[in-house]
Amino acid sequence: PGNVYSQTRVMSLFAVLLFAGASSFVSGARIGTVTAQTPPMGWNSWNHFSCGGLNEDVIKGIADAIVSTGLKDAGYVYVNLDDCWQINRTAEGVIIPDPSKFPNGLPNLINYVKSKGLKFGLYTDRGLYTCQHRPGAYGHEEIDAKTYASWGVEYLKNDDCNIPPQGDADKDYGRMSYYLNKTGKALVHSVKGSEPIEKAYNVSNMRRVGHDIRDEFDSMLSLVEQSHQQGLAKYARPGFWNDLDMLEIGNGHMTTTEYMTHMSLWCLLKAPLIMGNDVRNASKDTLMVLSNEEVIAVNQDSLGVQGTLRANGSRAVTNYSAVIVQHCSSGSKYQTWKFDNSSRTIVNQATGACMSTVSGSGPVYLEPCVSGSPNQKWSFGDMNTVHPDRSKVHCLDVYNFTGPTVQLFDCKTNGNHMQNQQFMFDSDGAFRPNISGLCADLQAETMSEVWGGPLAKDAYAAVLLNKDTTSHDITVHWSDLDLSSTASYNVRDLWQHKDMGKFTGNYTASSVPSHGVAMIKLTPTSN
Image 1 (cartoon, rainbow, N blue to C red):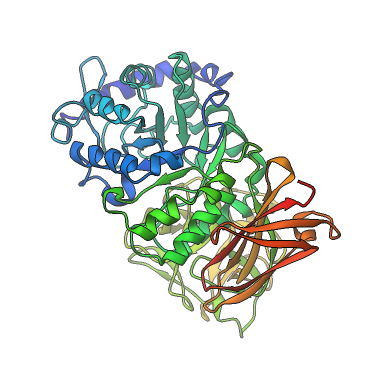
Image 2 (cartoon, helix red, strand yellow):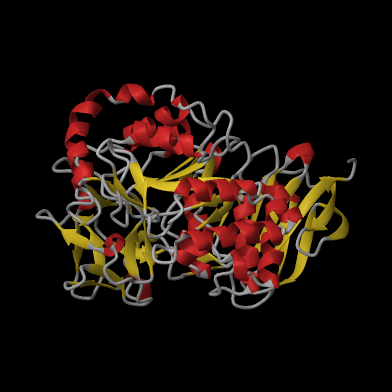
């Protein structure tokens, strides 16, 4: 490993000097004026093949299958290699593909993919090394951008592992954006959530919302909820999209009903549709979910407005609930926590799940405990502050009233706000901020929800979501969608491919299955 990455280490020293004035690269680095006018659609290697399964034969087989199954015709055009395609750099700093995985060379593979009428994408990382400790882009943005453009790469996923102390998300992503633009080629630039959303629009086409998705219903839903809680919908528009992470559809750990929910929400929220399954062995049900042209049309609608949560029903706590503070109550089973000294995790005793952070800042959530996860390791400071291992400069923080999500915020060393960052465990297991009468608790999640958003030509799309364990009728009222209660709309069910009739004021979907949805399109009767 020392020999493989020595060139990157040398460059990192040079980069300290080179990037002293790098902020000038960020200005005017907007990359979305041509690319990603609708959410990108394609495939990525990581969810199914990760590092060990990535090779030339797999990628050729995937490209062939995307064409033969009709997925290309449905709009999936990008074939993206994730981490582990690269192995080293030349003495001049040019990145080298792993010859053991790509014996005929990466440009040869790119040409093969493009011969199928598809586009090709690669993975990089703004740090010194990628998450799998392959060569990172820090200090090599210009030469990498030129190399990728010369190869015909049209999509770049830019991660954020192994960042040097002088690293800065906005400047690092800004440099890559600047040099991608300078090539004159149209490349989609995808960045992680460490880039502030207010700035991401200037340097990328899409930005990750939260944690890495898992092939689990709760994990999938938590990303949708994080997008809502962070108020991200207002930033989505042609050229820039909120990335909920890759699709898990077809990887086998959710039901077909749950995968239909997954697809419906990604499409309504205008998330990029990047498949993460083995397309070569996709089942009939998987292809049915992925290729529903009416559902995809909502995602690709020219208006480009992200759907939002419009109404909800009953509530319950889940393993992915947000951590909040409430008035302490001896009857609340969710207010009992335990700090595990060996794993440095904070465990909710009622659920057995761990307090987690997405990227070292922002809201704090529960997630199922994962051994060794850096998102779940916590340390206590001298002044009873609590900070995640991922970011020593951020501390748990809560305002002086009940209900808000516990967040990670810049650590305070003095002043009135410091009490908002002081926590302690009581003998009864309560985890308390230094504010009288308050305890850490969990936010109950709604069991039925209505999500909706406008489409072109005065149409509207809605997802009626049932998060409960039994089936329910779910009603959407026109007022939920900011529509006139006296207006009449033609309602079409996009999964049944069926016109349901003309309705005024509201529509009720009957017996929406557990963890399922009814996805509908409303068209004015005058149209």
